[in-house]
Image (cartoon, rainbow, N blue to C red; front, side):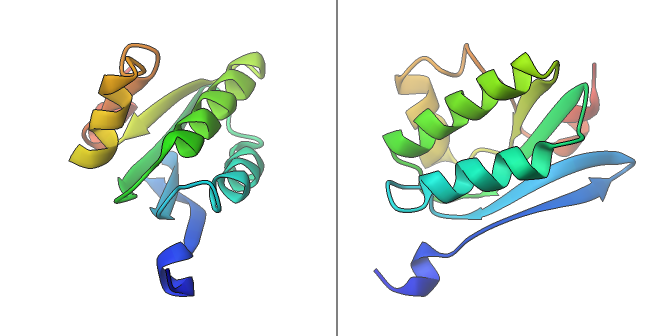
Amino acid sequence: MSDETRRLDVEVTAVDGAQVVRVRGEVDLQTAPRLRELLLASAKGLRDVVRIDLSQVPYMDSSGVGTMVFVKRAMERAGARVVLIGLQPRVRSLFEITHLDKFFTIVSTIDEAAAP
């Protein structure tokens, strides 16, 4: 795969007063370690709810799912709740097949993530 395909970006933005961690790119064995580092660094200082927008993640493999579980547990130990936003059908099916859709709070939109 090209470097452009392997590109992974994470940024924290404010949406309607709520901070959202946006992820863009494919999450696989090669990019998952970097995603873990970036998510943990981006979520520092975020308390209460960590909103992670995955709407720009077209592909995630099991290493990416493992990273999301690791990040969720780390955030919960720090007192924050994790909400995943906008999973594309391919990624959402991976969470459903592994029954992690019951472990994570998954919503379709940022507005839904803002609800208590």
